[in-house]
Amino acid sequence: MPVFKFKTPISEKDVRKLKVNDVLYISGIIVTARDEAHKKALELYQEGKKLPINLEGLGVFHCGPIVKREGDKWIVVAAGPTTSTRMDRFEDEFIKAFKARVIIGKGGMGKKTTEAMKKYGAVYGAFTGGAGVLAAKAIKEVKKVEWLELGMPEALWVFEAEELGPLTIAIDSHGNNLFEDVKKKAEEKRPRIYEKLL
Amino acid sequence: MKIEKIIEDTAVNLLRLAAVKLPGDVKEALQRAYREETSEAGKVQLEAILKNIELAEKENTPLCQDTGIIIFYVKAGTKAEGLDKIEMALLNATKRATKEIPLRPNAVDPFIQKNTGDNTGRYIPYINWEITQGNSIEITAFPKGGGSENVCALGMLTPGEGVKGLKKFVIDTVIKAGAMPCPPTILGVAVGGGADIAMKLAKAALLRPLDQPNPSPELAKLENELYEAANSTGIGPMGLGGRCTVLGVRVDYAHRHPASYPVAVAFQCWAARRAAARINSGGRIEYLTHKV
Image (cartoon, rainbow over the protein chains, first blue to last red):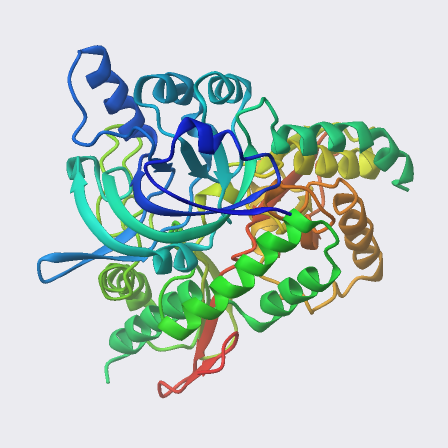
């Protein structure tokens, strides 16, 4: 199982080296975005307006963290991934528009996203769902927060990360989707599982 | 100390214990899963899970950022002091715990989409009441994450489909859920009663510790059969492939209407958080799920 360590901004060339089942640790700037942030970012893009941060080459994290204020600093308490399927409806346009290279989440994403990752050069890194402290440990600093009016979970948190991971590459930029494979195999096994049931 | 204060303080402690520290039976089941898992990707996930559990305990911080919607189960002894104060005490405890621990604010108005910011709202925290004999109050805090909640399923089967239909429905639900509920999960399965009763029983079944077998040998056998079947789907830890898809299956039932066969499947993520305590007369507190 090959292990990669990349720092953002990540080039298209580097991201295309990753294959499903590889393990990635990512350092540098990671930006959180959930449903509301994806929606808002794409609306701004369509209006020809700029985002508060250029996402090209960065990691985009499907995450609604718990963050607390200490003095003038934000401290991340827990920051595990949220279910990515909710962002599936936005992600192909999002990757096309902003050229983010590593989408981090849990639960996997669908066909449209897989195709966009192949076309524009991006991967999906599965971070262990629920491992909120492990993630928080890897976040060294909150650089800034935007769109806090969307609420703590939905805001755009800009993190400086150090070796956030392990991320299992579950969708690569070559059209492979580990989650879809696992599901397909489970479907194939279903008749045999039925047979065994008393 | 006043009884309402004792209840409030205990409930804050329970919410903290639940958010920070998994009960022993869940930890043991996860360690066993790690030992037994054969898929490489699955092992990577389980290792991260175990590491995360350790870190959370060490740092006294919530192990998952989704600290859930707050649910309590209360067994209220008819002769216990302060019965009329419990609800307000649990409400205050939820607000305090949200700030002090902190918990993520997770109570959103479904029409105007506004987050109240303190984990309270209409019917939230939700309290499941049970009246018992005696003079003690037993409180279980059960913060329930959204990921595993979103794949819970209710099947209004026909009586003709029967137990075999139930088993198929459970397996179909597990396959359909795939990676979403953060496997390895615990499955609560209940049949009978009615739509609401089946789901309520399925969810409450998740409270039974993983090292406590079903007292009914027939149901224990059914649990085991469903456990093996779910773990042969290959979905594995976090849906990345592997053996360990569920940590356990808990089954309960109610008698059914002759025309109905409702089957409910409730999922609990690997971060199976629960904490319980009993407040005895005179305010003496016993913690039931955690060493304090």
